[in-house]
Image (cartoon, rainbow, N blue to C red):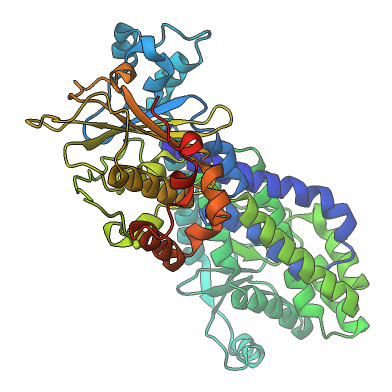
Length: 541
């Protein structure tokens, strides 16, 4: 699946999960917690839908990438890989897309027990186009509706009276500038615009109390940047147009916004003033519906929610300290849940194409010290999962080779079941022959030290890797990985190294300590796991 589609689906799913949890909690908290906190909680859902902020161990990363390689994955370090279907047709799914017809001709789907991969390959190239068409349509509807509404407003706007302007200036108290207009075409007060915010009120008579309440309400919207939130909601709705939950979330955010605004306005009011504010709400209630794309904060728009707002106004009182603490705890929990769910950011770069990794051709000679490893660079690819083939490939491609006769060519990852394995395949470069005895049956000390040090670094950087194998052939590959040609293989297990050095995950987090261990091994001060347990750790297969 295209990385962009994975990211999009993971954002949509994580936002929907958060929303479902909040809808389930709503009956328990709506009368107990601050309306402002409830509004902010829904803004967190909006942020989760829009921004791919996460960490590697997030739920969505595990869902979309944790089992990314349930079979064996082959990564060619030099050229695009063409796999032989007889070795496992499932490998072709990680190759650059070659077209369904070409894959059928090559027999890629021959070993499939169902038609799932065939249909995926058939549909995947069109998914981005279908999604983009939906985004363009959704944005166009909103932007065209907004432009038309602004145009109609401008035709009906007339300057507010000096009395109106004076009351607005008094309520603003010198904090911010907002335009004020009257308009005979609208039926309820509203705030509109981000760059040039304007309060527009119907051109009908209001008492001073009514006008003050109207302006207070719209000033709160202005100070809380609610118009900006509405624009973000438009973007989220366009991006996630295919997700039915997005329309429920949009409605809930708009409703929570008005409740939070009411709460802020009446916070310091007396019961009589609250009654006046409620009366103002009733007086501006409207049956009018504005067209799609109208991005305004209206004082009132739907009569069916009037009762809830009036009840909230009359029941409002100062929250106890315990309720305040509970409100903030819930807010923090929702933030933590949003981060923990995360998006499926997966591998670095976000591309389907496999990386062309650097090939190490350095010969270590008699040492395998830390100087031969760019540990800072390698640590950039540290990962929790062996299934993250981009990062594992980045680590493997930066390990030095023990003999200049060989270069890295491929890696394979096995993650269908424990033990999870990495194999690095080496071959002869063009124009180079191997002078030694073949197959290699006995490793000399320096060769073994290099391999075991490479294994130690790899285990320290890939947290759930259980075994690593270095495979060699004394010829060149032809672009097709033939595993039978690699007849010299040397394997190392994680457990044997951890007997010597403890938890390698911790070692991988301490670059200086890892550097010291590598230097000790180079000096022969500690043969480590490979030196003391050769039968278990290093074996020629």
